Image 1 (cartoon, one colour):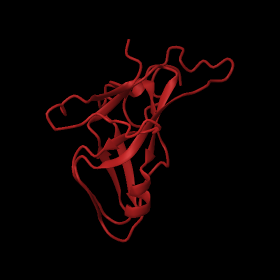
Image 2 (cartoon, helix red, strand yellow):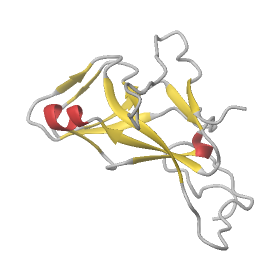
Image 3 (cartoon, helix red, strand yellow):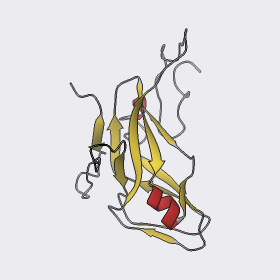
Amino acid sequence: MRQRGFEIVTGWQDKGIQLPQRKTAASAGYDLAAGEAVTIAPGALAMVPTGLKAYMQEDEVLTIHIRSSMAVKRHLVLMNSVGVVDADYYNNPDNDGHLYIALYNRGQESVQLAKGERIAQGIFQKYLTVDDDVAGEGAARLGGWGSTGRGGKE
């Protein structure tokens, strides 16, 4: 039985997308790369496609973090500080669960990202819920970004 991992999203299979890997035995994160070349102007936001989706258990989350080299050397930050990918984002009807990295350029010059350049890292984690939590009773995700709470009970 599959527990957690990455797949290439529909329509990106022939675009040379590589599945993320940890680089050392003690690395927590799986390196996520740009699925296509992107230029980010100073003071601008770019939604960088990865060509990937992630599957995991229902009590897990994939958190997305900026690679330190992107932050320190390139002046890029994640627009939402830490990305949160819920288990039910996988295969959602709006975008197949495609992982995009929301990068903001805090620098004075444009930043060019090459296709395949490692830009972020994803860390799978278990999470806890409170007593009497009912969020999963009848609710279903209907959509992609920002869609939590649009389906089922609200």
